[in-house]
Length: 310
Image (cartoon, rainbow, N blue to C red; front, side, top):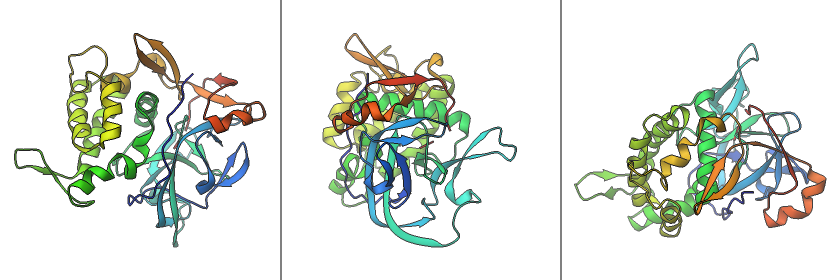
């Protein structure tokens, strides 16, 4: 059993998300995205699938969307023949609204790689800010690795306002740079695409994991806020050491080949560390409603499936 730590609901200036009024099917009925809370169950992409909310972040009180999403938010669509999933920014889909509108923005992450709105749009918790481009085959293992990382360190990664804002505020604002001592300034956002590329390679095939360990550790130490940084360093005592056989960031991202393409998490305590595998959770809502307030995962049935996300 894995309990995902909560993410505080805070406004943040990083506008890449879901419209707050987007209707979602949950165990409590149809709710606006802004009203979803950690522990709720949202309809997944597969028939009968329910996905546990692990992060529900209020991103902005007023942002621009095209229909239900910002243009750079990743959604899942089918190929023309319906045989394959494609990960695309919402602005690249034929279903995006040509009329922009202003609304509050939220971001939602779940135990599944993707969930759907009440009208059937399938979406992920990621955007092009993190990964400029993704294929479905890259996204599935990437999100599996993210779930393992989140289960070990916390879900603060989905909320830049609490995870990173203090770091750049200390340095003078959202576009501030970090002088690493060699005269080379670096904005915290600028390192994300490189980290995504290395995470994809490591999660998909085990390639570049050593490079990921070094690059991710450097970015984490420089840009993650102190409370969260402590959690990461305690979770990964060998953070930044690619020679270590355990206790590293890249070990969770890499996972095991047996864990794909299943997409939820199963934890087992081994040697003081939580090893996360991936599985799909199908929940009987009536039996679990009383436990949602405690953010617990219980009375669940698992089934294998290839999921189409966030």
